[in-house]
Length: 320
Image (cartoon, rainbow, N blue to C red):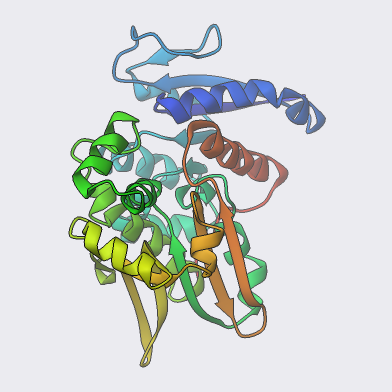
């Protein structure tokens, strides 16, 4: 039995679920001959009550990273995690993250580590619904042509409520009251969260250096009840759609509200979930659908990444 030391950055809903899942899946680690030891959990306030296993080492001091064989990052944001993770990655050790904003906007700093297989980030797009894994492995044998996806649950919720007659303002207020949307909600309703995820996906199927700045973004703030009603009358639904397709000799990535037929896979499979339609010449049309957010859903993908590293699989490598 060997001991593997794990450092955790962040202890919000996802971080707490990761800690519980590490204990719940102890039998799997035992079968691998591994004992997991959490060296530290970085938090802003170590005295704040949290739902964590007894003895969890909560701390404001990140020096435990020096003793960690692998780091799991769920801090969110960009500047703080980048400052903590870059020196760690440069030491040759692996990082598991769900931070799509960091991946999208700081790719120049992170790409060499992703190419080296040190960066694991299945949970960064669609949380526990696996799309990055297939795109970075078996789907590369097929010639990619197009993808469409619904990748933000907050926008999905608001547009669904508007179909029931609520105004955008009413639906947004309800989403915030339920904890689905932040305050301010710009990252979600402005389309930027979806754009982050689309940039990450584009690097597996179109261009390994695809820049976040190339994504054209339009949110749902200007969608009206009249727009939604007109779409429903025509047998359509409005969704915030991320789309990647050929444009001349390059690729065009867009995020915008679109009217889709009610029979479209993103309207059926993605009725209340995240969904992605992937099209390739050889593989045909593939549909991925499932939970795209949530503490345990996200934790399941991140602990899955940890198991991949323990078994010896490299991280998620973009196109060369």
